[in-house]
Amino acid sequence: MHDQLTPEEQRILLRLAREAMAIRVKGEKLPRLDLSSMPARLKEDGASFVTLTIEGNLRGCIGALEAYQPLAEDVREHAIAAALDDPRFAPVSERELEGIKIEVSCLTRPQPFAYANAEDLIARLRPHVDGVILRDGFGHRATFLPQVWEKIPDPAEFLSQLCAKMGLSETAWRTKHLDVSVYQVEEFHE
Image (cartoon, rainbow, N blue to C red; front, side, top):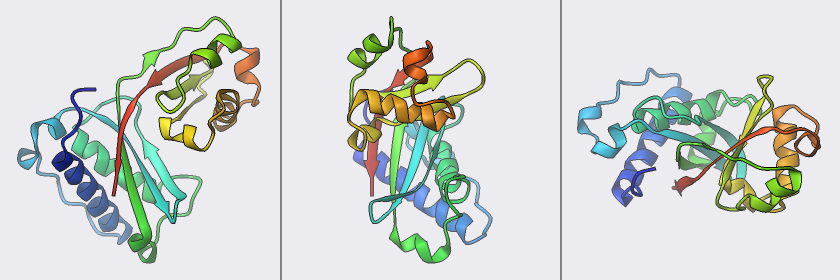
């Protein structure tokens, strides 16, 4: 990741996320984003996750692991997807909009994480620092943002829950050599 976003850039991204989510939840057409009016950093390709909560409870979370579009567009797209397309939840309703809190996580480029065995993997992960991506080579992939360490601080349990999210046995990380990548985030919220 580049330098940290400025407080103003963070405010712009949160505003864009809120506006895009509200417009689409109300069923309206999203206007084109005027990138020419954006700070340079928000025009650069960036990968983000947008997390929605109501009274501290998860209400939706969707994002991208790799940068493929301007960061400002990425945040708008994922705010809408978190509100309307997270398969774990019904779409956000208009009456819920006021109670939703938005968190944006801007990701660094994922880096392959070499490890010798299960013990080495849990010994080398950095709780509260690393986001983790697991892949099993058969099309299964899942990630937990670094913020998930707050709810699952034990590295073994973290990996077990990530395997379950991926649709594998919770012991898969102990019994087979999975592809692991790590990344960090710059997280900010309303």
